Image 1 (cartoon, rainbow, N blue to C red):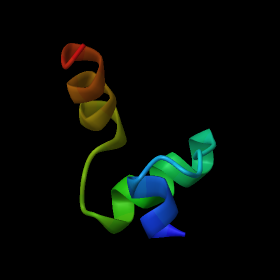
Image 2 (cartoon, rainbow, N blue to C red):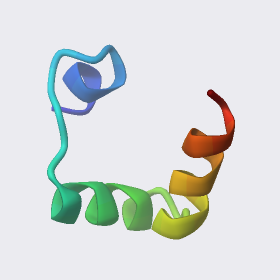
Image 3 (cartoon, one colour):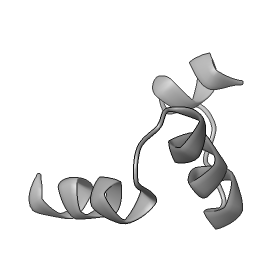
Length: 39
């Protein structure tokens, strides 16, 4: 599943995104800010 997410073949819903960030010891809020600022 992680490989599919990383290459864009699978989307995450909101709860999956939060769990994914927490598993990586990342803040979901800060991660969204980084994504928003990268465009």
